[in-house]
Structures are given as structure tokens and as C-alpha cells.
Length: 259
Ligand code: ADP
Ligand code: MG
Image (cartoon, rainbow, N blue to C red):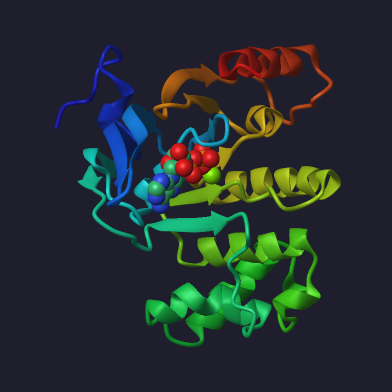
């Protein structure tokens, strides 16, 4: 195989390729076009946020990439292979945590490893490593109801990463926590991202959150859900909201969204 030249599109070696994806929800009573002609790529190790107004199809796109929903047109490719269903190559984090209330923190994090048949002592060792990564080692035997929202979401992240997925997919994961906790979780997630070198695709309607986190922001518009622009966030990390350049990106993306 020859080396790709600089003039070739980046999609050739992209981790995720979203290729002409459309989605129509059809029932007997109605037909909703949620997505139309969505094209973008995510490179290996890249942190990409999807932003856009409510109803522009962010969750639909997330679920399609996750393999929970089938595209009506086009396809998603992960490492070159079309996505046809859910798989352990994609770790998912949801806004409402989705933890099993009857399982302890440790047992929640172990879930995917059990599904994969990973034996002891490897399983416990991996769970321990993940709990260390998200700073919850001391809460291994607690139940979700004993945890704050921020801690629950750290369990969600640990559970998603335990099976060592190729990509971390998150749909408004910090939408249910207060602003101060959210700031802390941003720092945590960026640290985890740099330690694990994972590819991250993160959905949010919060423009500041997108500018804080991402290498690139895919800005979406509604009716039908589509990509309106892709913005490269060329800011050093750590990023401060108070920096003028940060505020410029936020303004620019808000204008694109029409906020
Ligand atoms: P977002 O996450 O950006 O708010 P969604 O992907 O949830 O957007 O929704 C996009 C559009 O698709 C909306 O018009 C929504 O009402 C519609 N939609 C989402 N899920 C379904 C579904 N299961 N059945 C029918 N319509 C749906
Ligand atoms: Mg949504």
C-alpha cells in the first residue's frame, strides 16, 4: 500500500467515516427526516464534538454510529468496516448514566468484561485500573444511588472504557450535572483522553463545552438534520473560557447555529 499524499482527503485513514448518512423515521402515521447527507470523518485519537440545536439529529447520529439505529442512506465506517450493529469497539456514555442500580460500582464497570468472557483475575485487574483512571477506587463497593451525578458519570466513563473500545461515544454525558461538576468532569475527561489516546465523539448542545473539549467541532443545523460547518479549534490546552480567542470561537459557532 502506498503512503497517502498530503493532497488526498483525510478520510482515507480516518478512524470513523460518516459517509452520506441520512435517516428517516417512518411509522404508519408519520415520516420524519432526521438526517440528510451527513458527511464527516474523525481521525484516530481525535476529539470531535457534534453541536447543534435541539432536534437537529445529534442523538440520531450518535445512535447510528453506535449501531443502535440503521441509516436510511449512506453508511458509517469504523476502521474501514461498515457499522451494522452495536459492538464493543464503541464504548457508550449517556446523559442519564444508564448504570445498573443493583450492581456496585465495581460490578457496573465489570459488565462489558463479563459479556466478553474476560476471566479472573484479569477482569478484576482491569476494573481496578479503570476505577483508578476515573478516581473512584474508594467507591468500588458503593451502589449508584450512593453517588453524586458527577461520580455516576465517572462510573459510566470507566464502564465504557473497560473493554478498551476503539472509540468513545458520548451523548450529552454532562447534561445532568451542575456547572461546577461539569467543569471538573471536563478536566477529568481531557486527562483520560490524553492518557488513553482514545478517539472521542462527543455530542452536546453546549457550545462552550464543545470549544473547551474538541479538536474539531461539527456544527449541525435542523430540518433536516445536516452538517452546516466543521470548525477547527486551534487553541492550546488547557483552555480558559475567559481567553478572547476562546470567546471568539464560541461566538462564531453560536452565530452558525443561530443562537
Ligand atoms: P437531537 O439529539 O439533536 O435533539 P434527535 O436525533 O433526538 O435530535 O431528533 C432528530 C429528529 O428526529 C427530531 O425531529 C425528532 O423528533 C425525530 N426523532 C428522533 N427519534 C425519533 C424516533 N424514534 N421516531 C420518530 N422520530 C424521531
Ligand atoms: Mg439528543
